[in-house]
Image (cartoon, rainbow, N blue to C red; front, side, top):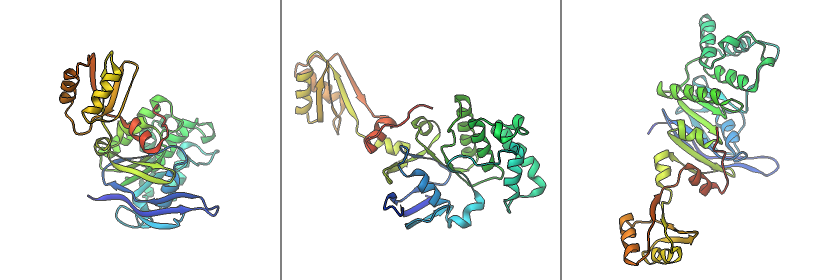
Length: 306
């Protein structure tokens, strides 16, 4: 499998002694949309800054597009810790300055490329408006436009939908999906589970500076534990029966009993309950969603809105 982003033992320890990132080994497949997920303060932005060469790692190494970060940068677009533009310039003029600073960009095509990028993020009508008059969402869109001034093989985006209204959020997600369909690899830092579920093919989960899980979404879900739930008027008896059948982590209360499915077939559990004389009003196999999986991995809640 070709990797667009990889790291080994990537670590950042600050002078205070705090270890912000601890031996992170990333594996972002080429062509994927990789959700870099974790609660605020989990080390996502610090990791991204090391990948882009903005800060030096204390230990470990990383590669972008199969080479060093510095060599790969012409093919990498990034948005880190929010946009930073000149307040007194218009959106278009800010992008002109940004494009002029790129020695790999063709000045002859600058005007067309800038307007195309503005149009793609829905800012063409506001291109002449000064940046100071832009809303937070418009500023975020302009920053995204800055990453689209030239074709990129890799985009690294830190919370790209921050500050956007629901419509703007949908538009940015659509842009990301379109770029991925064109072959661009996208590494998307986010704390929104909905973002991962809707547009990501792979995910990595950060917690307290460590990468606690990563892989394709189906593989991550497959690694989670499946439970059964029995609705009954005799929950205590149902719980005892589940334990006798070999289920682990059994609980019973409020008209139901639950337990880990393990290797048993659901129909065998139902048959066992019936043989034991337990009245069964309902039976369900519950496979945890991403929210339950990530809360289990980190012990913290996530923002599931957006």
